[in-house]
Image (cartoon, rainbow, N blue to C red):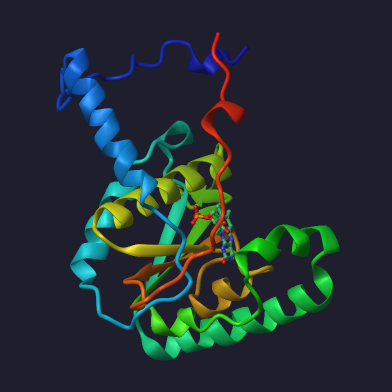
Length: 229
Ligand SMILES: Cc1cc2nc3c(=O)[nH]c(=O)nc-3n(C[C@H](O)[C@H](O)[C@H](O)COP(=O)(O)O)c2cc1C
């Protein structure tokens, strides 16, 4: 029992606003429109250097920031990199790790799983694409009193926000790559993030290069990953 919590003021509420009250037909249409839009999302590994306004990225981040999070703690940090010199440092560090990964660190089974994607240690897109977005999760926060504040469901929350971000970028007409150079502790050093933040993803965002090719891969059918009760 936590007797000290008894008698706390009840949580404040406010009216729910902004919900669209669609009938079933309109709902089906909206669901289908979104499904069709998401079906055109692909991971891109060949980017053009065409600039993307910072304001577009900011708006997409604002959408990501509205993701649900454990205990409403938003335990994420997004570090955006448009600066060429910093992108170069990230590329050099990522390629160093990836060379070792592909040469010796990755188990054979992992390399076999990656083979249909045609990836290797070379990551030129880390310099070509206009924006790199490093996503960090804060293992704990710092309270107003300077004390450590426990965070709950950090990986789940960070990945939900990242998913929102990928959708927002796609919706804005941008191509993305969800990149996980392994390991990626170098992102803390280069982007000056504190030790309590763990890097989760390096999202590459921009326009695809002209004539961009993507791996001819199939996704599992929906019924292979769903069950209904
Ligand atoms: C957690 C995660 C990590 C990934 N890491 C990499 C990566 O390091 N390099 C890469 O080229 N693709 C990476 N991908 C992209 C996947 O390979 C890609 O999503 C998958 O092949 C399906 O292709 P699609 O996104 O075009 O549907 C990653 C995706 C996820 C979700």
